[in-house]
Image 1 (tube, rainbow, N blue to C red):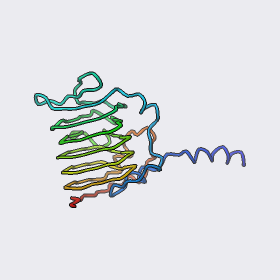
Image 2: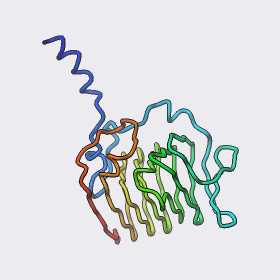
Image 3: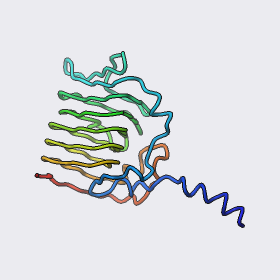
Image 4: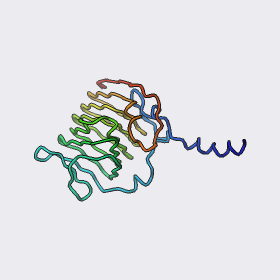
Length: 204
């Protein structure tokens, strides 16, 4: 019995956090020590930068040294810097596209508007800056600081390891069921699957 306890005890220490403890309603910061992190090999295997833009009515991205359509299949894509600007869009076609960035900037962007929030997961190891008018259907975790300014509409989930600063006219709808239905490769354990709704204009 003692041996069984000792063999199980280390596993309990390394268990992933509950998703409901990370993605709260309303969104919260200061989760850096909560154990939510992707595998190290995902963050180290980077393609380059991702810079998405609108050209001729279509959205494209510089992905490393290549130009690609701004449509992603399920799987992991790791980048240094990310930028979506000037009405650029991103689309997905299944569950779950996982995008990893060192830092990310969204300026008047539309991410995954035709998909479900569980179809797009964004992890930012550094900082996230959101300015202008943005529409986002996604689950977003930022290990560093998070800043929303201007107008933004986010459906899905949001959490920050560092500070979380939301100003301006922002609507955030938290859907924990989407978190549980997404493929987060074991970074957190499914918790309460009830729908939580949170909306505010964050007027400063």
